[in-house]
Image (cartoon, rainbow, N blue to C red):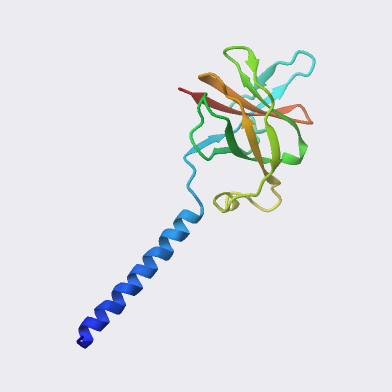
Length: 163
């Protein structure tokens, strides 16, 4: 083998190794394609009614819901919910506002803030994540994943299922 052939062979191996490392790093954190942002609302405990906050309200809560795969009405759904002041959430439920019913409450476990959200947090912001599993979204239509805070606020994620 000539010097040029050896050099090209070694260069090819280095490029291959670099490509494998880059693909590994990219796939290490799977991209999430099913994200929903939280809307803020108020909850009247006496009537059970939820009222969306005015769009000009400064009482918005920060929150993000990320499904790891497209939710549908046939399979149990799992998601990561990251919300501001998550320690003050008393319950999470599933509700279909168009039908007037909900589903069995999901199971909530502690989660970790993914690196793609860490840059959204600022000093003093209390953002925590939870794994919400066993979500029985058993019908097509509009579902709300509702986070009830101890202070009467509600965080809403509107999820439209087509299948």
